[in-house]
Image (cartoon, rainbow, N blue to C red):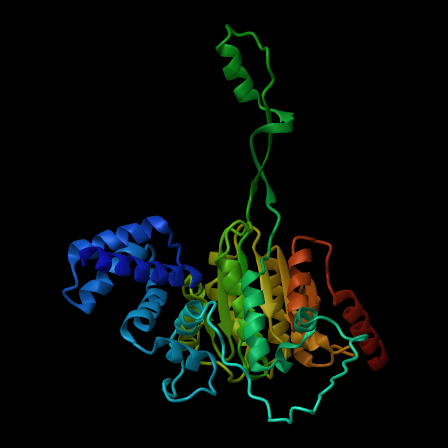
Length: 419
């Protein structure tokens, strides 16, 4: 009887660990063995004790607790957890799921537990046995779903397409090349390291038998993101922050640090929230702190606050700044131009991502855009996955200006016509 209970326990814990691994936790066979031994040693005195024992075995970071709690609740506490999870993933299924918004990591836990489960088949209208339905599709001028998703405007995406776009953005990266500094270090460089050469000669009685060389050291720049969360930028800023979260939590891209700020009517620092591994919890916390979401726009005032309070802290060591905004500001255009110029002079590169550039006939007609455009190093579109992929390819190219040169010519022509 004891062997049967232990066998069923091992089987259930194995499936539970598999769900945790699909949800993103680093759970391996060794942790499953430790969990079985810990549960057998602690016993089944209560559900809370059982949860704490498993948490001690499977959780290694604080940010993993949210996913663990959701998977545990769905797997162990709810006897109808399969229907509960399906109701979260498919809102049309009622009767189990309450009408409430899912908590952070809850949908991820549901998708992990439903991995491999059969989804409900769609219902079709009844037809007679003799009736044959023939569907002809002309796919000669169509493209794949993934290519269409990458070129689709964020504002035109449906709820399903937005969810798929978030998964694509979570896998994207923003690699950068290191910066060459003035400091020299050991290496096969063009210059002779006199100090190391003389120290080596002292070990051989003063005879120089080898010339030590030195080369410039390399360091990684900071990435600073200033994201507009006003009403006209709401959908673009949400997906852009998903991309920034993926960049902030992906190692091996070269960035020393990633700092993120949101602005609408005020400036908000959300850097510490984006360090949370779970993207749902990170953006939920960032949205709670940024009280001006989907409100008005005061770009000039927010850039002034950033230049005064944060530029010296985060723009050192050749930082790259991504300014994500449509440039539609009602404040004084002269002050906006001065603050943009100060920001561009304080960083190595100032890249402006503007979703309005998706229009083929876009021209710098708004006063805010005319004031900011001369002071940025690059002006690029930021309305689709393809535009972000293009940014990843050219972000390390100092010669890249995007559409700035073309728009500056248009701006010059308009000024000449006015004169």
